[in-house]
Image 1 (cartoon, rainbow, N blue to C red):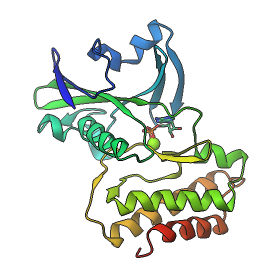
Image 2 (image 1 turned 45 degrees about the horizontal axis):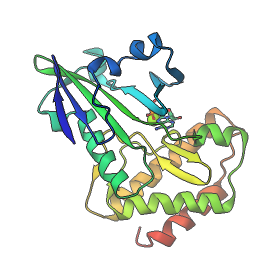
Image 3 (image 1 turned 180 degrees about the vertical axis):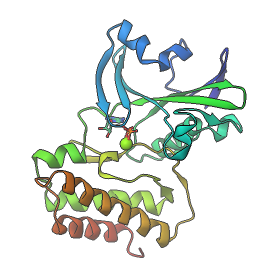
Image 4 (image 1 turned 90 degrees about the vertical axis):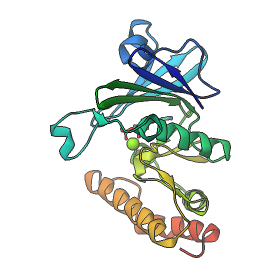
Length: 239
Ligand SMILES: Nc1ncnc2c1ncn2[C@@H]1O[C@H](COP(=O)(O)OP(=O)(O)O)[C@@H](O)[C@H]1O
Ligand SMILES: [Mg+2]
């Protein structure tokens, strides 16, 4: 990773970053004006899907949650480029991607400073043909083998010490028969230990149950979770 200085901050670039990149690439208006927006995902905020030449990317702005949101919707205290949310996520994604773990390839992060504060955005590769688990389970079921494969995939992340701060059903994508984890904001490497791994799994279980509360037809039942755990324990029997 290397930094490109800009008028108000910097762009953190990877091997996949086009050399012509500028801070305007991190604004949805830049892509809209060229009719290169290919889709959106609307949660609390919008994630943009854009096309750059033959590549498909995802553009996300970092929004605050919780109490600080009242103070500013997207300003974070600047304590160094490597400490920013976007650069930390870019670096983590790059490490995971290089280790061959199923995560989107990171493209670039943008940091704009103003006084003690910064705003940030990230560009990552879009996983081709992927949908998140909530979208999938709304209209189809996963087989026992698929639930086990998902459990095994999560266990592989855990065995390598990868902590995902927000492991939920919307942050798991399925493309073909491969599961991907996305949204590594505030993720990190941790010492391998069963406590945070269990907490991570419990969070995921709560997420499935919460989504089924909202959508009773969601194809998630207790049996699915048992299948997932079976696959998980085959890779990580100690947790
Ligand atoms: N790299 C990606 N490839 C394909 N789809 C993605 C990718 N990143 C995000 N998405 C889709 O957009 C949704 C929201 O993206 P996410 O990064 O999780 O942002 P947030 O959780 O802040 O809304 C995901 O649930 C997924 O459906
Ligand atoms: Mg998400």
